[in-house]
Structures are given as C-alpha cells and as structure tokens.
Length: 372
Image 1 (cartoon, rainbow, N blue to C red):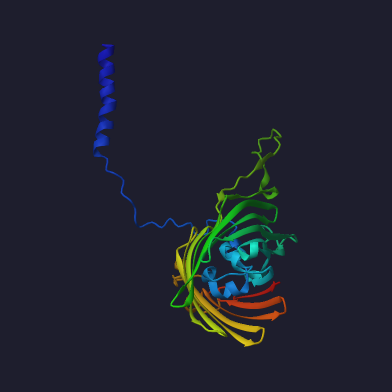
Image 2 (cartoon, rainbow, N blue to C red; image 1 turned 90 degrees about the vertical axis):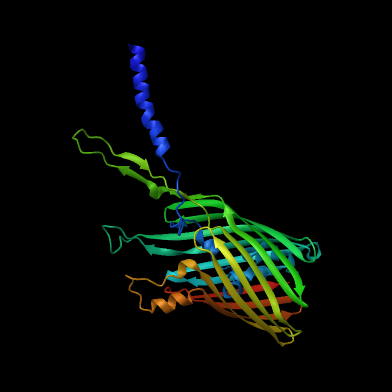
C-alpha cells in the first residue's frame, strides 16, 4: 500500500512538470529595449577636453595630436612631440564649476620615446547645503574635488607607427563622501602619406579601469527604534552604495592634410566613438594654420560632434529661456584659435576654445604650452 501511494504521488508531481516543459516556448530576444546605461558611470570628468586646441577640434583631435596634450587624448602621440614640453589649461565650466589641467613631458632616445605626467581637477567650493527641512540652506557648505593623476609612456615602433599607454589614479570627493579607482588609456597612431600629403589614423581605448564605490561619513547614520517604552538605544548603520564603472570610450579617427604647403596647412578630421554610458556618435573637424611671420604661426579651428542621445528635441517641462530645438541642434559645436611663437630654443603656444553646450551655458577654455 505504501509503495502504491508513493508511486501515485510521484506521478502526480512529475506529470505537471513534464507537461509544463513540453508546453514551454523558447525565450524570445527582445529587440525593443535600450539597455544603454545613460548616466551609469563614475568619474565622468575624465571625458572633458584637456586643452583648448583639443576642445576646439572635438574628439577628432586624437588622430592629429603630437604634443604634450597627448596625455589626455591619445598617449601614442607623445612620442612624436620631439622636445620637452609642459602645459596648463583652464575651463570655466557650467554651474560655476572649473576644470584645471596640467602636464609635462620629456622626449627620450632621440625622439623615439617619451614619458609624461598629467594632472586634472574638476570641482567647486563652498556650495550651500540644502535639506528637506532647510530648503533655504542651513548655513553649511560643501566642496567637490575630482582629481586624476597620470603617467604616460609612448614609443615609436617605426617611422609610421607609434603606441602609448597612460595609467591614472582617480579620486572623487563629494562633501563627506569619496571614491577612488584606477583607469588606463591605450592608443595607437599610424602616420603615412596619401597623394604626397600626410595621413594619420588612430585607434584608442580611454578610461578602462576599476569600478568606483562611494564611502564616507555621510553614509553613516543612526536608526531610531520603534518607541516601545523600553528605552532601546538607536542602532548605528552604514549605508552601502552601488559600484559604477568609469566612462570607457572606444574611438577610431583619421586626419588628412588636404593642403600641405610650406607656409600653411589645412587638415580635415573625423572620428567614430562608442562610449559605455551613451549612444555612439561621430565627429568632424578642421584646422587651418598659417605662417604669419618669422617664428609666428596662427591657427583657426572648428568641429561638430554628433551623439545620438542629443538628437531628441522633444524636451518639455523645462523653463529654459531659449529655443530648445535650435540650441540642441548646436550641441557639439566647437570653435577656436591659437598662436604659436618660436623664440630661439623656446616655443610658446596660446590657445582658446568656445564650446556650445546646447541648452546649457556655453563654455570657454584657455591653455598655454611651453616647449624647450
């Protein structure tokens, strides 16, 4: 009797499972979902331009750069700078923030290799603290300081190919919360000729590294127990945040001199880029440089970068005093100019860039470079 009951029970449990397995359909891949992690990265300040020339030419600059600013765009270009160089850049960014960059590089082995160090900082100071209770401010202030310190090595493997790598230690400080991590840039540069004019191509991976997880005193709190009249003390707790990856980018670019004369040059640039926290995009740029006099050169620059997440002009519910459609269409437009002096063994360059930020305020950037 027990064996018969066990057999009946087993059959009763097995039959629904077999029936369910037979009726189940294979999973169908969903094609109508966008899994892009918009805003899902940390240390986004690493994507800001490192100097004004690069800001004016957009991301396309990575295939053209051969000076100290290579440490921010494409480490492969550092081996082609041909001299020791240093630079400083300053950007008055949106919402009263500022972005500061500095770098120095040394040409080694007769110009075949180079070593560089870099520093960038983004943030602001003395911002008022607002809370749900003190919506006009509670009298306290806080600071934000995001910093990246890097070291770059670059080598020319032949007269047409160079490669380089940059390692960075990155910290972000937001009030009483901080996080840190490491990132790596890897870049290559091919430089040859087509039709007797210089052609350059680049392949770059930027900001690949460890995840960032915020920690700090602001995440510590005391949880009050239910008032049951027994005098239980509050329980200390520590909140734990999610970890986020750095803003990794994959970029492929090309630059070609359509005009390469003795006293002037016109270069056209283009680039495709794929970030891990946004839609892919493309950029186009141009730079015209001319010799003004002995030892003095001047340049005009411009670029436009298109990114898919800026294409939707259906923006409602925002009280901006601007034409949203036209401003969004200009998002990605950059213009700039620069001058360069050769004074004996010294070389001094000053550059300026204007960036249109769409419905946000425009941005101005200045940078100074010194070579010896």
